[in-house]
Length: 272
Image 1 (cartoon, one colour):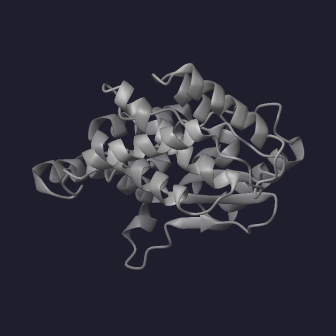
Image 2: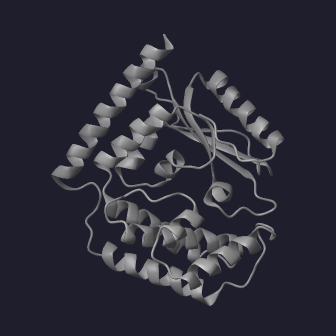
């Protein structure tokens, strides 16, 4: 599977392809999923946005039996154009079980460099079984709060606005725990009024011609929207228990273990 929009520089895409191939060769891993994250996939790139490729990788089954396991992150050199790194599948599964939405977003990115859709669907299926919706809300609440207070740049405000929009989407879709990844879809599929939708569209258009670190006026309506959604989620979060308590957490860990072992066995069969 490969989904590359025309807006991406073909030279940058070729550079990412080369880095992914090098990771597989040098580290002896298999990469079943590689996507774009960051502002390009979130729907609000700037003229100087870098390329934030993220990938999931799987080691040979025996590697997971070592007394001295390898790091669960693989990073490639960071520069002005490329930010390419990935997580071991074991790390991703553990974080998903705890309600970390990052890996789930990677599985729903609109920009895919290379991927096995069957693998993606299996991991999303696991998430549907084990992820506690309240923990996804907590993830976006914490990210939104952190970004809202981290500076005055337009970039930072977008990084708070998107979690706030995800929280509104979750409130409007009680049947789902997995919101879309990109900001325009979050807004289009939620109950925000036309004033908020228009303000978001205008701000995205402004960011498209503003350097990443540039400042711009934050529309008062969007500031209020962001603060209100974070406040509402904060009130709900205050009454939640921790993610690792009780019988349900034991069930989640057991199901995640079983899924991971099945995935390793299936990968071993396909690589023989």
